[in-house]
Image 1 (tube, helix red, strand yellow):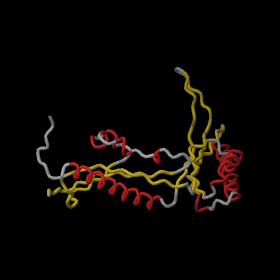
Image 2 (cartoon, one colour; image 1 turned 90 degrees about the horizontal axis):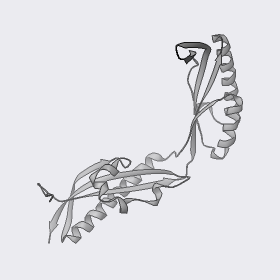
Image 3 (cartoon, one colour; image 1 turned 30 degrees about the vertical axis):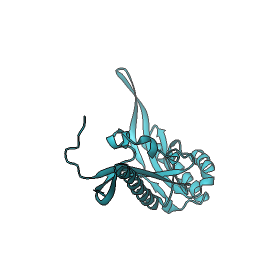
Image 4 (cartoon, helix red, strand yellow; image 1 turned 90 degrees about the vertical axis):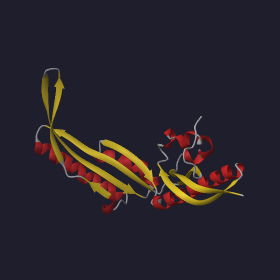
Length: 213
């Protein structure tokens, strides 16, 4: 039987999620060109970079919303057994683009590929107010922990005293922790799986003193 060696009060785990409709999108892609000479590879990649820039401006993406790496060049080989074949020089330019026009994402991707973006690495939706969402989720998590601890204390014939311990918990990894394993069911939320939304979660363990009478 497990015993509490140093009883001091009550501790409860609380979790909460806040969801919002995305208001921005981030697209990551590359232009990769393989040619027999460095000059040809640079020239083709540079032409595609110019075309991609024009597409972005045509879609209303400001230059401040575009991050681009410098053109990189490397030799490319094909290895087969003990032989290797020189394929040419590969020139690469990587882009990260942010836009607030979510309705235009599909056509933007189509136009970028047609302009020369031949590696789409990711399309991620996000919200601009994520910091405020996380603060709200943390407040709700503390409220949830307080409500749970109050219930336990009431059932045990005690009352909660002041807070003596607050521990931030990673909500993504907490399922393997002992606090989560005892309370997974009532802490799960339909908002944890919200298609078409950005969900921000928070979790906390709060410790309280308890008094009797």
